[in-house]
Length: 65
Image (cartoon, helix red, strand yellow):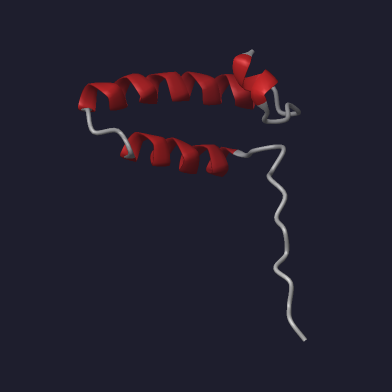
């Protein structure tokens, strides 16, 4: 018998630890200190806004808003 790998569906609601992990991954991929500062500021603003409305799903519409 072969075991089938479970297909993982993406999370629709992200929590703060997920967002912090994503933020760290993005910032660590940037070579420039200035870019890191700019992205860090923008990501912090986004996370603050996202967490202020707890029932939002995380999708393109939410990110664009």
